[in-house]
Length: 428
Image (tube, rainbow, N blue to C red; front, side, top):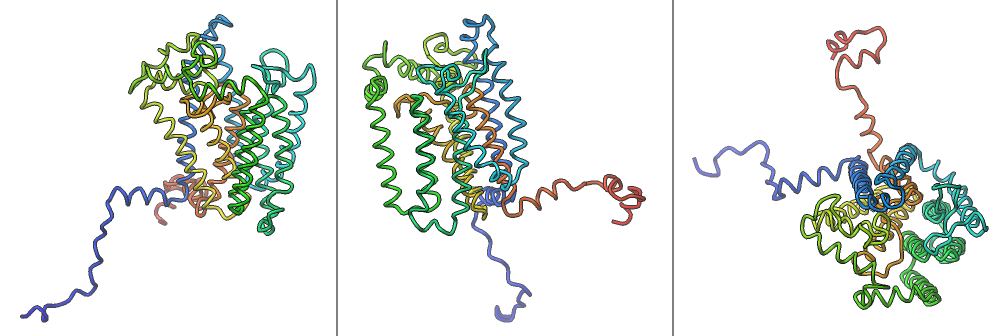
């Protein structure tokens, strides 16, 4: 029998896939409906746990010196976490409609709180910035931190309402830019340029996300950059920070003290760090070790590996935020997800850039890691919002219902009155 006479297979064999098994497995995981939800929950949870641990380590010396108890600041952070986690859970259970209902209330409430900081006896000055409201004792809040979340909510709702008009440049800028300008002006008046820069980044990011023309986007960047440069030039200490950033070792005993000791902490960490709790710089050499410069303590105690792990977790949060924004069809969800991602990542970049010497020191906390309830609560609520939006991705609700389904025959008998588990099993 010749080759042509040989019997042919009934069905042609499918060509073997050249894709590597591990790559196919990754793609399969990423294509699942609840992938965004699970990755975000894991990354944010790890950052929060690491933040609690590092606040305990970085604040122990200062707590001992000021209150004669090494755990005072740590206990306060635990209280804020205990308040913030239920708020994040509630946010994760809410729908986009609920968030849109709160948009204007949140904006007006944050503006009202910002105005209160200008009233003598209510506003409190901390480190040269009058951006706190004191309620007596250790309880005080920073309204500008809540303004970040409020502004993202309001901008997302505004652009969602004007979805069909966003091809016209005037609808891209009005009333968004004037309202954002008012909030930023109130914060600049508190001498808090760092938070103002983050809000400027959020404003520009929202304009980019909704599809602004390149010329308009570049023009806004130039205007915002010019405004920021003007405010820097108006204060001598801000100019000193800029000049110190250009040459951080020029005056290590005065203006460059904080940057110098941050570099020293990072350099002595090595690959694996000196161990949790063994930082030397937190013993008075590094100011704000448990707040703005907590990443320096992380680098010293956990080394390069720990620092890269933190960077990887933040990049994971950024990836999930972009993924949620691109996989949803609801305009509000897309704009809010993108706005939250821009806010958290802009704040992260400004903080880390200052610690490692790539940006001037402006004094803002690292999201989910630094001490402080005013920064932690809005961040946790924002994570809860992203979790809520992740459950709105295509197929996510069906996957959640499948997860809630009983897996055993005896469990279904509880749901079917009048039948035993044995009957249900036999019927299957």
